[in-house]
Length: 201
Ligand code: GRF
Image (cartoon, rainbow, N blue to C red):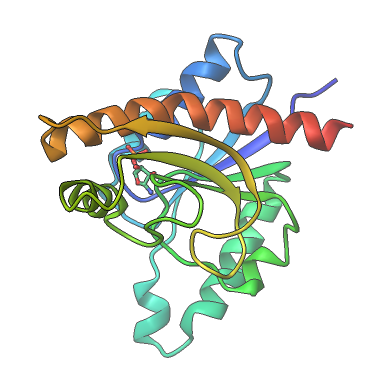
């Protein structure tokens, strides 16, 4: 039987992509990464994919906005590229683009996203920094990360898995970022495994 097919979407460093690549290689994730898409040309994650012999696709938004075709045309074209790779699950791992229903409706319940905050907290960008600042104000005493189904509302959608991340008094922001990324690398593998089990039932 062929293994479930993952498409991973990235915009930057790709350390979470690397966690998935390593988990597949080490037999902890019974899947195959069939395509890595980046909306940024200089994303280091593209090099990680190439090193692992995974096909890559660069999908910049700018040509669409410059020509007035807009986000829906971008989402439709990207959906066609992704669809051609017949994914079972599409994993947004540091993907900095908010999808319209044009993309999401092409893959119902199959697009998931990693977010470095707990459900309902710090949606949008700079979530780790905002949690760190909230801790300094004594508004929160810990943070966390989650993987959720993607819906048009940013960083919302049914939660697949989450993990608490402690914050300590003498933490710098860099300390918290490092602890968060470490937690994310475990969580993303666990969440993809959960989704694969759900869809095989
Ligand atoms: C992660 O913290 C993810 O939660 C956030 O962007 C970061 C991506 O890191 N949305 P990387 O590119 O996987 O290293």
